[in-house]
Length: 256
Image 1: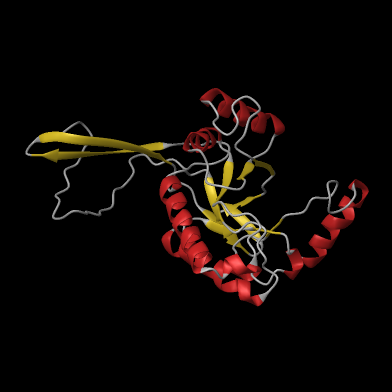
Image 2: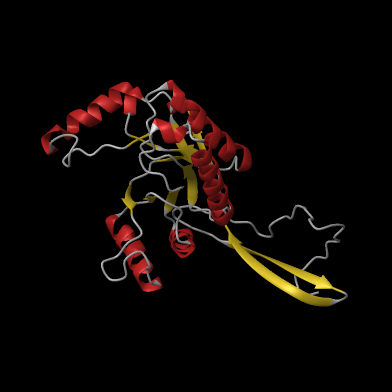
């Protein structure tokens, strides 16, 4: 065995056990400490496979109307980010990804929403390294009530959520799972779709929060299913004028 390795016997196609992280350090915005787990597979004394996974140790909670990172009050300030570039379309180079993260840090944000699809794992790696929190969501934009009640659509959504969660499970920067962006969620018939996806996310990853971008806002009848309530609003663009922004935020604050 290599130094630091511990032998675990296998009794079938799958084996599960727990390990204690030596000299554990919390991952935080100020100090994004990362650890590496390495797993080797041996057969007859010969190593036949080796894989390493980087991860971070942190907790995220939603309690009493507040978010807590490592039990400390968390205030997020951030932006939406699309995976696109004028020089390369949606296939970004590592240099372009690094530049995006550098821009985020220059802006002084600590949070980014990956709108509106599963994120490039390289981008999440950079967020892990630099201490930027991420909301990752599956691809779905303004699904109608007809789609929300379509078994095939919901099967695809569940599959996309499962694959996204499996791919990004070890990224400490990812603190929220999202789905069904701007869905037709002001009618009770939409609740089963949101409840199914929220239930899956909570059951398979209780270490993260669940949210979605709501365009129905205060009329949304699914908000109680979320850990974090998120409204998509566009004052200064097409929802309201720029000078109406304080009033818009005031309405939300009064409602909350």
